[in-house]
Image 1 (cartoon, one colour):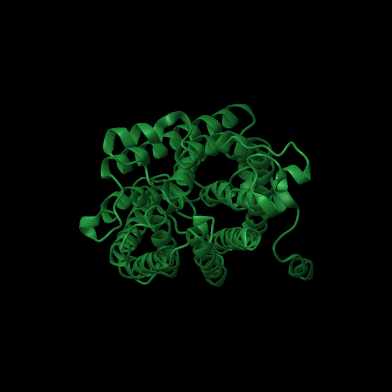
Image 2 (cartoon, rainbow, N blue to C red; image 1 turned 120 degrees about the vertical axis):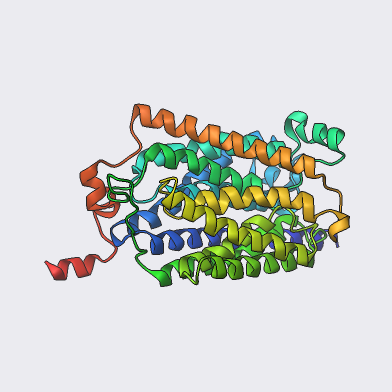
Length: 407
């Protein structure tokens, strides 16, 4: 019976890892649909290469930093015979699951720096972020490293609660991206000399929509399967994810004036925000959280474009950085028993943990991308950017046969 239960857990976590891995296709197509045709190939390659680099450095360095576990032993040992490893490779599929989370960080950043970032510097940044920056905060929150969670529990009565990564994954990714976006500066032709915004339309609404749908579908693996066992699974997480998603859609529909980019990203805003408290909130609380997140995304994406002149191509700072931070705080509000939640959370602890994650990621973003900018550069030159990342970096366009016919 124990073997059967363990095998079921292996399959459960593996299925979750596959669903979150599929989300990276969503990241790719969301970016493909948003950028111009001359940068579509680059978007597809960036996401896949970033995933490969992320998995490599997380396997050798990051997972050890976060959880104190390494894989420098025999296959039999790490499959369950060795101390600290669960039977039938359960520990291994948990690594796969958490590696897909880690790889989401550079996938988030990719959307913000699209259309003008150099390729190899971003690969280096990915290695540093997933190998060092992300695991330090991940281990602090999810493994209790450095005693910070114990300190928060003693101080406020509850540790920082982030069930599926509103802050650990999304806010950290979004605030890292903000540093990179500010250091890169806006795309050529995005603003006139007087500062007037020049519109750059998406290349494909259907591809953008497909990316959103893939992300939404995979998100139920991202959230529900964060339980990491059949024993810990709860339908409440699925229900809360659903309600937050529809809240984000409808809010973005209204505040975004039916703009398809806002609507499809509104769904993601709601899902980002609900991650932290999806296991403790009431579905009506999740609906409110998602609705507020949809408004946050539309409002701050617009402010970035028009008032602050921040050229965040996919709006990853409003979507992941701000909505993720809102989700971290919201768990401390709607998770309270007084508002229908399961309890066991502290608003003060949630605010401290959220602010710490955002500030840590913003500082890391400036340090990593600032160092790269000062040494090898992080941006394409004007001719390369005008030509497009596809031909400049990869020597092929998204429609090579059509290009040959045109010649």
